[in-house]
Length: 135
Image (cartoon, rainbow, N blue to C red):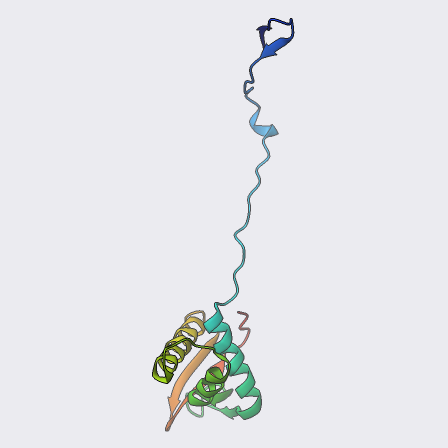
C-alpha cells in the first residue's frame, strides 16, 4: 500500500494483509516422522531374530489346544544381545549392569507393542515373535 514519497520522489509504503476466502485456503499438514525402535529394542529384536532362526523350536506354550509358535529360551536371546550391545562402565560389573538394563528395556518395548510374547514353560522362559509384527 502506497503511503507517500521520500525526499527523492521514490514511493514508499507498507505491507498489509488482505483477508481471503475460506475456499482459497490451502492447508498443509506435516505428518510426524515415523520412528523406528530405539537402539536397545532394535538390538533385542535382532538378537531374537538371530537365535530364533538358529535355535528356535516349535512349541505350544499354552498347552495342546493353544497355537504352535517358534520360540527360543530368553537366556539365549540375552546371550546374543550381550554379544552385540556395547555398554559403557568403569568396570565389568558396571558394563554388565548396563547391558542387563538395556536388554530389559528392549524386551519391554517390543512386548508393549505386541511384537513379541513370552511365557514360562517348564523351566524355560520362552519368547517368540507375534504374527504380523512390524517394528
